[in-house]
Image (cartoon, rainbow, N blue to C red; front, side):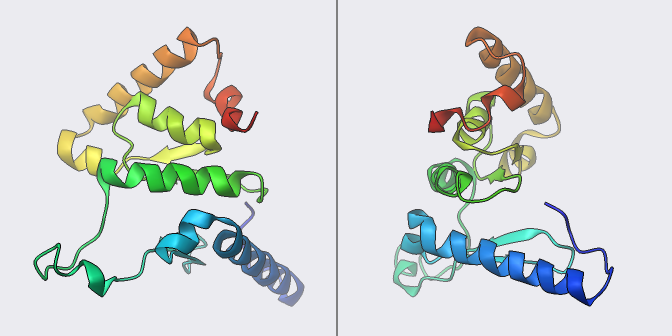
Length: 158
């Protein structure tokens, strides 16, 4: 996705319209996003941000402690969101949430992600997680007959 370069009012207006359209598509056409009340926005650097609003109904389950959901527990929501939005946008998608193995990365890639983010697994396992995920992903790709990650992007869509 091309980010604004400050080239003028016309470019800024076009970027604003494109951003508004992406947000509309995310919120209207990604059922999982509606279910969880997720919202898509862009930060000042042009990065996409998916916000999951605070839910007071969960206070009792968390003992009144506020926090977020991450790691493996968030992967099904993330993979579904990538799958739902893949055919509706013409921008690279980054799979986020629970990428702790090559198989987890491939779930996102096959759903339509061009790349994945590794967060919780990095904190838990250190820098070696990148080599572990990459080796496992490449091994699985080879076993199923793909020559590159890019060949596997979106294959779950048929």
